[in-house]
Length: 114
Length: 112
Image (cartoon, rainbow over all chains, first blue to last red; front, top):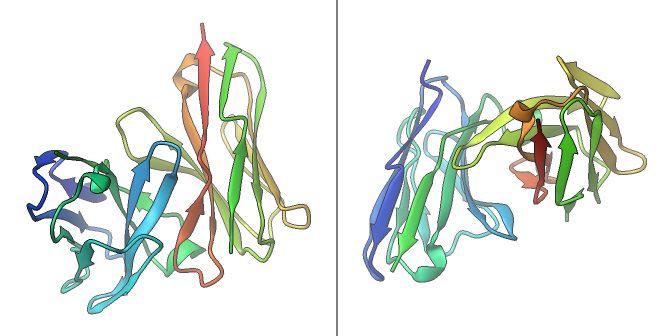
């Protein structure tokens, strides 16, 4: 029973590099989202998706790109990494849009930008 | 715009004590509120989700209440144990229902 799986768990990048954080869920959930968690700031929504082919911006979308080609996968792309993107990134999913159902979270990706 | 606040930011109690964690929200037109637990270096685990039609939700030693009129929710932990040590987060949906707005959490330490 995998739930929400995020890879990699840890990553160090240099400023300007690009990379993709992977998120996959095996619960056939329509809704998926990406949050970042920073000390003193709490969790903030980056992007979300209510189904395959549908994505939208959250509170802090700048510097990130997403796509949703399948129900299972929702990758997050950093286009040109900046030190301000050093954070812990969480992917979440739920059966319905937003807060109607409990959200399931992955274990996170800890990203450092040098 | 929904804002969620949790107090206290940190709490230390001896084992066996009953305790209450507080959560307040600014937009009372919510249809549910969710409590999560986060262990160090881990993701979030959903503990309880209270629908707006409910006033309480219980799971084992945990009891969460919701008072929309006052914009408050509480998480009651009975007979606390060292294994309860973690950060507890509450979250309410935004107006569009497209995201959860999180408080900054209460970090609980239970000593044996």
